[in-house]
Length: 77
Image (cartoon, rainbow, N blue to C red):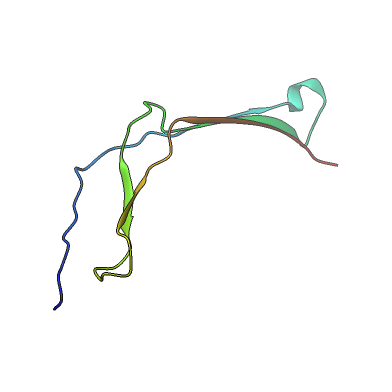
């Protein structure tokens, strides 16, 4: 007997922000600072579904990542 487990989730919108400051004005030609923010509004969302519809596999839901902030200093020679 085959069973189908339809899964769906509401739509969502994510906003990511990337800002880069070139440091050439301070004499550092190939150097910059970068700030990245993913999921700016910290939206809770379903990132995906997995597993299969048989008695040996557990179905699962993968939640999307929360807001994350990263910064980088890149120095070129």
